[in-house]
Amino acid sequence: MRLYLVAFFAVVACGDDGAAVHDAAPDTPDLCAKPASSCNPLSQSGCGAGEKCTWILDALMPQYAGHIGCARAGNGDIGAACTYRAPGCDGYDNCKQGLVCSDFFGGAGVCKQVCDYQGGIPACDAQHSCVPYSGLFETETTMQAAGVCDVACNPLTDNDFDGAGTASTRTTNACGSDPTIGCYGYPSFGTFPKTEWSCTIDRNAAIAQPTGLRHRVLCTTANGCADPSVYINSCNQGYLPLLRESTMVSTAICTALCKPKNCFAGSCGTGDIDRLGAAPHRCQTPDRVGSFNTGADGEHCRFIWSFEIDTQGNFLRSSTSDTVGFCFDHSKYLYDSNADNTPDTPLPACATLPDGFATTTSKVDGAADIGCVDTTHAQLAHGKAPAQPTFDDLRPLFTRAVK
Image (tube, rainbow, N blue to C red; front, side):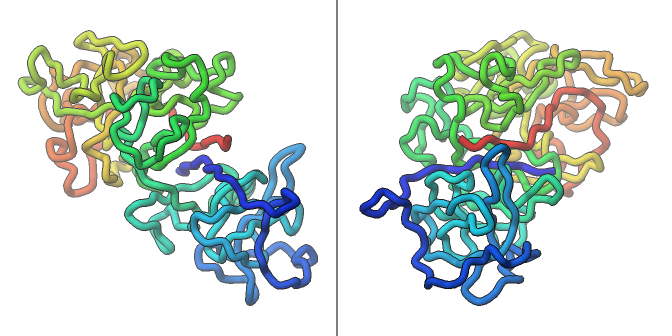
């Protein structure tokens, strides 16, 4: 299972004639004559002296193509302006060994560290997240070989949830002052890469603000959310294309991020308000923008840890397992109540369920079954969850667009 990330853009240094400045490597023979390499971009093995194992841009038209191979190492440090040479066998960037240009589609970018998104070496520092980029270090026939270190962020405080560009919803600035940059991520579903959040362009920031592509807006080609693919950053910042519209409608919808609170029978706040999450990050207006069913059996803020478990019950904890959630309407999704492999019953309200997991796999009779409580209440310290009931709410999407 893979996650992809969008590239960032920066102004590239130019010479007096306006041409992009490339590396200052010695005038050595071109590498075009060399056969395709099986080098390793993580260990930087398999190439000769003065070379790097990197991504080489083969073509932009009629369709994008590239490959992993050896190229001359450049002199660009982390954060330095960079660009790729013209597509072809020497279509490489001017970054140093172990780095790669963030814009691998031929535009201006910055050099970023290559990393192992499976949790190995090289790893990013605490201020960065290692995430794979769509179309980088992978081809149609090969698995993703490496990721890139992007600036880490807080999805609750580094997003402009209402599109107003004010501090009322964006209270920290890990992603800088550009209002088109938000904090995006995606749950792991129990396999690497683990759930992480990084600063990424809101590719539809200009669409019909302030309502835009926000909670429960369908992600279609008609409104520009799909083109025709749906990407993780197709929705506006603070909203992800995580869910299907309903069990009966498979179209993806933009889904609001929220701050979850424990909610189970006898412990869900006054009027069961805790089902909506914690203010100012509740599943309702004005905390979020969109269409919200705030009825007892409607919108709930579900803990993200419930999206971090694989089909065998293995739990891959992240730094936001207990602090970030998604708004989802229980009335829209059915579960299989009689184990006949057919979803038939709407999900119950969190406040009607006892704490912990269900005792059977064919019932939703525990608050932990549908992420109503944190991992302490779910008793996930051992890293394993019981078999989960079957219901159709998630829409796993693992590609992200480049601007």
